[in-house]
Structures are given as structure tokens and as C-alpha cells.
Length: 266
Image 1 (tube, rainbow, N blue to C red):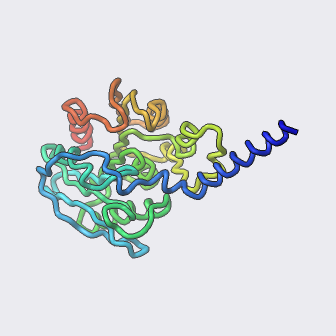
Image 2 (spheres, rainbow, N blue to C red; image 1 turned 135 degrees about the vertical axis):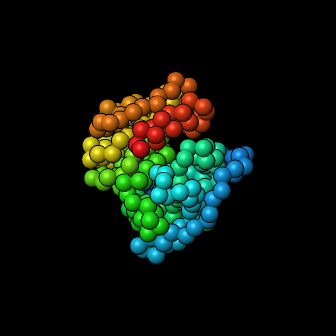
Image 3 (tube, rainbow, N blue to C red; image 1 turned 120 degrees about the vertical axis):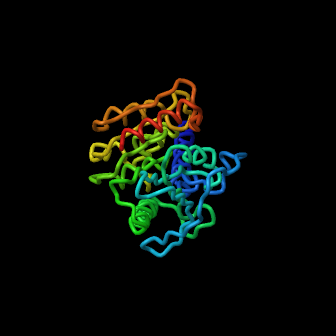
């Protein structure tokens, strides 16, 4: 009798834990108010612009136009936490890379209306590409740069396109695999709404790819970056470091790799 009671109790706990994961999964996945990097002053000139999505949501973005006719343009798609200000330490380095850039903030982030979902973020990114094209930037001169969660959006919108290049910083293979690594006892594939299956899409990317990942990443396992690199088409390049965690160090070595990759696209 005691064993039966224990089995029922454990089953109920497991059921309600699974139910909680299902109900609150997007709160666990998206963290728009988290301050995940702070302290840098903006040293590059930016223009605040508004990008309107197809479902009529206004998105805040930062635009730096050095010369769209002379230089490539980076569309930077950030990760699942924080605001545009949390990426200042990265875009400050873009100034001396002879590059234009558009740094996009997702729906539900940086004061934008709406709630983040996989489908919605794909729409946001495609709207940013359309906005750049309206400014006179041809797709062949756009580099899509995805950071963490942004790599999942990047692999989606880069499929079967002729973008100048693709940069994936700390990419995951799929959100299902990432979820299983964090919650191994739960049926993540059944519970998950936003799957971001990058491993099924990377082969559809024909643009040159640079993949960056640190072995000490405690959020996205390093093996995922390695696997994404293995599956990517040529030409492909890697920047794998031994000591970087999920927030990769924007040091001289990383910046040099970015410069080399961008230069190779000319």
C-alpha cells in the first residue's frame, strides 16, 4: 500500500512539474528584462529607427550607416535576454570593421509591444531584412549575425538565400536538444512550443559561415557549436576557444576573426 501511494505521489509531482514547464516555458526561455551585460559607453554613432513587422508591431533598432554602397551591412540578431544596451560592447568594435549594421530588438524586448515566440521572432528578423532592402541594401551585401537564441532565427531566415555571410555565436542544434540537456527527465519534445531546429536547416544555408563558441559555455553545450560546424556547408570557418563561457570575450582575437571573415566576403 505504501509503495502504491509513493508511486501515485511521484507520478502526480512529475505530472504537475511537466504541466508547469509547459505553461511557463516561454517565461523560462525569454528574458527581456534581464541585464546580462552592462557598463560600456556607446562609442559608435547610431540612429534609432522603427521597423514595422507584417503583423504591425513597431520594433526598436539601432542603425549605423557608414556607406551602404561601399561596405557590407550586418543584421545583428541578439539572444534571449537583455536589451540593445547589453550589446554595446560588441557593436563598438564594428566601427573599425568598415561595416554598416542594424541591431534589432525583438518583440517584447526593449519596450517593444508583443510577446516573443518562435514564429514571431522569425517575422521580426524578416521584417528587418525588408527594412534594409528598402534603404537600398541588397541581400547579397547583408551579413546575418546571430547570437545564442539569435542563431536559431538566423538559420531560419538564411535558408536558400544569397546573403553575403552568416555568423553564429554560441549556436545550439535545436531548442529540443538544449532543453533535454537542462531537463533530461521531462518529455521536452512533446512539451516544447518553440523548437528552433537549426540542425535541420544549416544544410540549406549556402552563404559562407563563421561559427564561434567557447568550450566553457555553461548554457549551450560546446558540442552543439562543433556539430553545427560539422553540418555547415563550405566555405565555413570556426573560432573555438578553450576558456570562453556563453558570453564570449570580445577580445583582440575574436575581433580579428570577425574582421578576417568580413574581409573574405568582399
